[in-house]
Length: 73
Ligand SMILES: [Zn+2]
Image 1 (cartoon, rainbow, N blue to C red):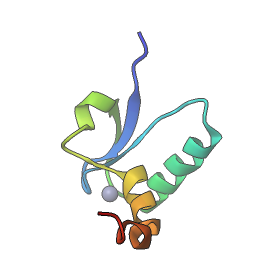
Image 2: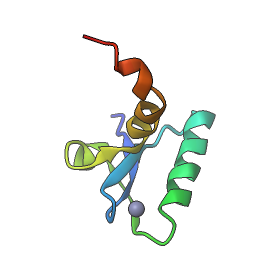
Image 3: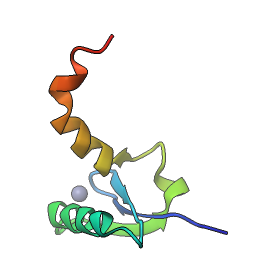
């Protein structure tokens, strides 16, 4: 079984998926933990946060791609 875990801030209701083999992901988790310093960060199964929590990774990439998505549709 391959259980995917996530780091989640219960205060902001944001999470980041944990990918143990990805250095990029390690940096993203550090960024996440830095942003939510002093908040309650928990490690949970991805299934527990999916839906109820905002994906930190997605939110970050959407911010930088905001202009590009303007012209679609
Ligand atoms: Zn937070």
